[in-house]
Length: 457
Image (cartoon, rainbow, N blue to C red; front, side, top):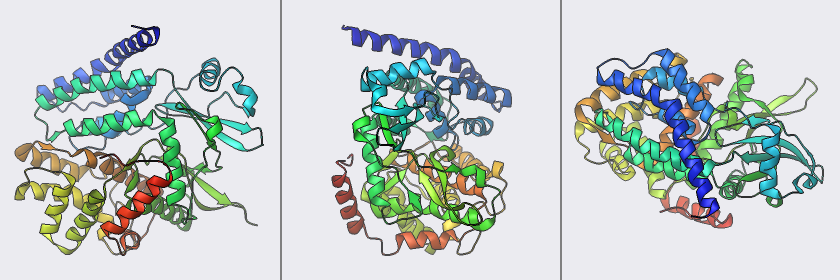
C-alpha cells in the first residue's frame, strides 16, 4: 500500500469514528424509541442530532437534509430540525485555507490573485466560498473543497448502508435502497468541481434567454477538481426580502419559478438543492434606491439531468391529475419506476402527488401553502401517506424520483417563506406549452454536447 492509499485509509477510519461517536448515540435513541413503540421525536434528541451532523460537515449532513423531505424516513421533529442545517457548517481557518489553496494552485497561488480574503464568505457541507479579485480586477468567488472529502463520502456512504439496513428492519413504509444509490451517485459527483463547472456552463446556456436569472461565468485557469472559481454576483440574501412589499416578493418568486421549471421542462435538468443559501436577490439602481429585478443562482453541485421519459412522466402525471385521467397517472408512475402498483397504492401515491402538484393544478392567484402554517406544510399529507403505506407497503422509491421530490419540496419552502401570491397554474402551463418529448430530447442532447457533458444512462 502506497502513502496516498494509506492516508486515504486513515482518513476514512477517522471518519468512521467521528460519525459513530457523533451520530451513533442519537441514532440509537431514534431506533430504540421506534422499536418500543414510542414516538422517537423528542426535540432534545433532534437538536443533538442536528448539532452532531453540522459539526461533521460533508455528505452525512447533506443526506440528513435529503431525508428530511421523504415521508417516514425520520420522525417529524427530527425532519424539522435537520432542515435547519442548510449552510451553517463551521468554516476552515486561515492557515487551513492557505494549505488547501497551495495544494490546488501551487506554491505561488496568491500571486494569481490581486486580492484573496482568507475569511470565508459562506460555508457549506462540502466546501466554503472566498471572495477574491482577479489580476484583471474582476470580482471572484472561489469555492474551495474541505480536505479529505472523498474519504468522508465513502466512509459516510458505508455507514449509511448500515443505517438504511436498520431502517428496513423497522418495518418502514418506504424502502430507501434505490434512494441510497441516487444519493451515492450525486454525492460523488458533487466532489468533482470540474463537473460543477460544466453544470454552470449548462445553466448559462439554458437560461440565456431568461433575464430574470443570472448565472456566473467560470474562470477555468483558476479552477481545479477541488477548487471552482467563478465571477462574483452581487446580491442580498433571499430571506432579507420576506417582509418586502408583495410586488417585490412576487417578482422574486417568479424568477425562482423560471430558474427551476424552465430548465426542467425544456432540457430535463433540475437544480436539486433549492435552499436559500444557493440564491441571492440582485437589484438595479433607481432614483428611489435599489429595485430588486431578479435572482442570482450560485451553486451547481447538485444538478440532475433526467432522461426525457422521466420528464414526460412529470407532464403526464400533471395532465392526468388535472383532467382526471387515471390511466395517464398510472403510466406516469410506471414510467418513473414504481413497481407493483395496485389501485389502493395508486390512491396513496396520489395523496402526495396532489400535494406536490396542488398549486399548479389550481387556476387562481394563491400562496403556495394556501393558508397552511409553515410548520405544518405537507405534514397532514405525509402522515396520511405514512399511515396508508404501513398497511400496503413498503414501497420502493425509484432513484430518479429522489431529487425531484427533494427539489420540489425545497422550492415550495422558498415560496412559503417569501409568501408569494401568484397564479402557479399559469406559470407552469407557460413552461409546458407545446411540450413534446422529441423536441425536449433534441434540445437536451444539443445542450449537453455544447458543454461537454454526457447524460448518464
